[in-house]
Length: 451
Image (cartoon, rainbow, N blue to C red; front, side, top):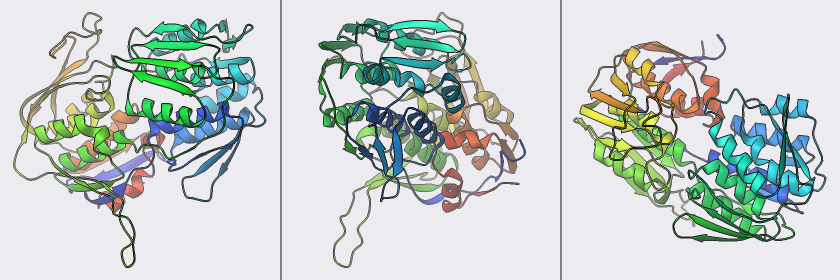
């Protein structure tokens, strides 16, 4: 574990400019979509993160040739020779990733069968997997449970269906889209997720030849087509990473420009950021011309000085406040005067990271009650899913162990904001979703190094 630790000397404001690439929550799904095409696909602005490597490995196991394009961050996918992969190989490559679930629809179309490794170790719980399996059964897939995992087949092919999600799950919506586009007939999905990454995936599938209508009230209609071709696409930028750096700027009383960040996809976050007392400025892109190299647009985030304001917020599906935004922002809220309230309604166990913040001097209490404006589905199920943050608190250095990706970046922000030297263990987990974060820290003037 000594190799997987970052020594962070806190107390220095982050200052400078970094860039975010394609959204982690879109890029991996776009890679899976390439399986559906009968010709090569090209994806640009792909971040160098572990999740991309996992999907690249899984595609390779299934006969998809994945090569680097001529542009930095470009990948080319050739699905001409899709084939089955052994269960052992899939288990080795997938680890605890949930990505293999999304291979099911495309593989059922291409091969007639698919395999999902045992995902019992997934910390998010079985609920999203159940949504996926229920959807696949609705299309006509059969699911056989074996010791090594789940084997799926479609002896009579896949057919369009009417399906309503009990909760607008992003993963289950992606599953339905990737399966319905080549299923015979029309599929109607109700209570669908409509996150920007979902819309961007729909854009990709439409480029491939799919017919998809997005109606009001979370209804998506997909008309199945017999075949799809490859795509060329540049994904939307990562709004989670952009918000994480914004929260880091606020917590450290710094000034960070995030190139690539887009206002439209971050409007809810920007409203809360300003309510807390942070400032931002949207910078427009400037096209290159003679004597001017041009500039990529983005958003500048900074702490304007003075005190931050306590706020009350609830996480929710889009267009609500994104669950992945709350963990980095809570670190900044420890520096706000008064009582801030956070009601987490998307994931039932996402406040465990606050224990580490309390060990650094924060004052955060977690509760089983719904402390938001409306009761949520976790309110009577004994989950600690609401938090009250009393501030401002002077954070001090500590030894921290990262439990998961988003909590890990929050721990990192806390170490940067704290006085003294912290040791953050398990930082390689951050590489799952944050490209080259150590180099970006250096670009922003942070004092952090591997021991």
